Length: 309
Image (cartoon, rainbow, N blue to C red):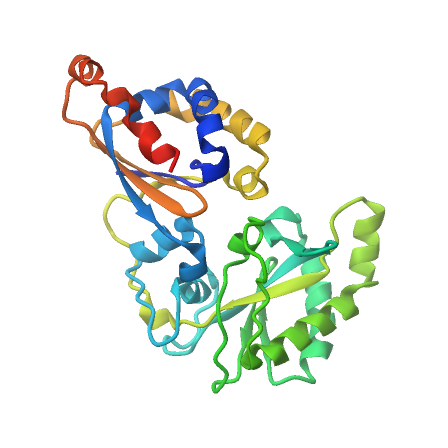
């Protein structure tokens, strides 16, 4: 069985500093790494458009981009809770909070916002007015993401909201001519929601406003294969939000809790570990050397080689 730990590989700028603290917070996990082989896959989000964890999810469904698509295009059908025509491109609009700084903008994803069903429905109804004057069409409503229809002759880039929210990409608004109409529409949506009753109520509660949205996707459901029927992987996503915010103190605290709740218990020696970060995915396969020989050969330092890349 694969055990997938999303957000466990820290950014390269802080990885070396966190290595000892991480090993101390989760000694059972890092003891397993000492006698295992790690295969590193570098995944530049500028090229894939998605996080390594999302890339891994798409690889499990054997997604293959076509034409000008990147991997992030596959997130449309992957995340959609509806069942459109298998040959119809799936585009999603995700609710977000966009904060404008002096020199850049940052984004909070829907997962960070604690959105209620009633809030999402009220915003959906007001967005219908804005969309009615555009070639785009809102089709279905979910709490965090809405299904939208994009004109068939329009070629748009796709970028995962989770990559944008990591704060490590600049100029994430597409600047090409094809995207200009979409940028104008999303700007109009921000204006519409600026003083919406939903956001007035959230402001009174001290909650982040739902003042923007992000559109991504574009692949068809037929580009995804059915999920594997073999033993499903165990997926641990508790570290994701702290990793995305680069809150390493909180990250270490959550890692320590995972040690107590998950890592310190015996696992099948044949289990693979899949570790993901911002731009890397590492697959850990069990080592063949006995523990005493591994220490004799100083194998216990190998994990730091790929950890600190």
